Image (tube, rainbow, N blue to C red; front, top):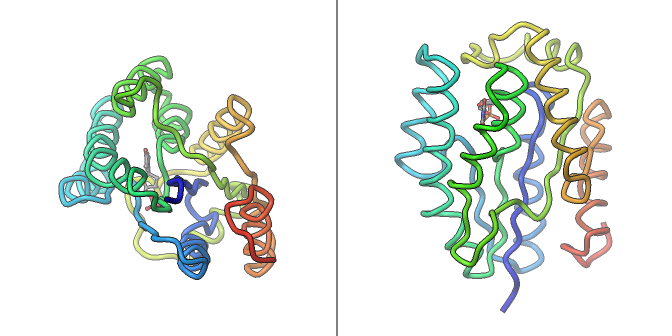
Length: 214
Ligand code: TMP
């Protein structure tokens, strides 16, 4: 049986990661792997309801952090762990690094409390804490991301934040990468779409998740 692979996609709003989630899922399907494509907050009926609240309803940073982790708990238990146990590839648009970047660095919420929640919510029965095998971090200058976002749909509570917020979120991702550099692959998201896609595929080949040449 194949070993399950857990890949997360991260970056500030406007970095353009979501268009690559599908391409990665397709590449694994093409390589005859079973793929579960999912997202956070969300991925289960309960977590999608929580997503709707957290993206649109006013709340304080503690409430926001708790709802992110509540959604994650359901998602990990109902979707991610069963898929990995089956040997599937889980392709997930955002995971816990987003909470450290947005609620931690962005909102200034206590990082120690976030670490404690991470330990509880992602605890494995065998001990240890579930983390992605690979995190593709779409790194983009916050000013460039803001320009891309200005052309986007009606903004949600996060997309509507000022540039200073996204500068802090970007720093939050930088800190997470420095804390666990092996897990992260930094993708230069300022490049044209095709070049970004090539970088992503290159990483998947280098890490031997895909065998065919890119
Ligand atoms: P998305 O637009 O990439 O689907 O993400 C939804 C928003 O939720 C995005 O602005 C980032 C935010 N978010 C957090 O603030 N904390 C989290 O833990 C996650 C997963 C997302």
